[in-house]
Length: 130
Image 1 (spheres, helix red, strand yellow):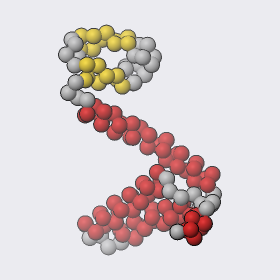
Image 2: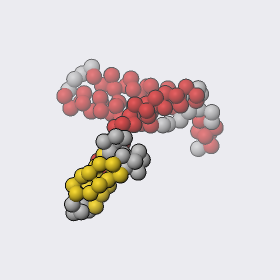
Image 3: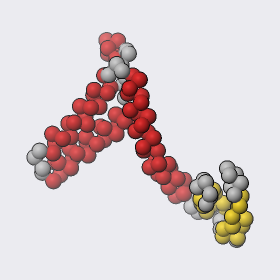
């Protein structure tokens, strides 16, 4: 174990982009096996090879920039799933609205009738029925 730690010292390691590359490789490989496409499994090795290259790379600065770009591209999707989870877990007691001006997610208790809402972020005022 100590030898592996010494080998990995100064190397980049794993991050979110590497995990996505591994997932992509797995999806391509499983799709190829499911639909019996003979050439497609070889394309599944490309993201896996890229992942291994990134893990053992010593150019940490470039790998961080790559991961930052990936995270900025996937952030809207991540936020959407997070908001969906919040809406599903609190759907019995609360109603969720987005501010028309800044799109902030606002939570209001159900059964209060028509209420005037002031967005805490942009101070925009609007009315909604809970």
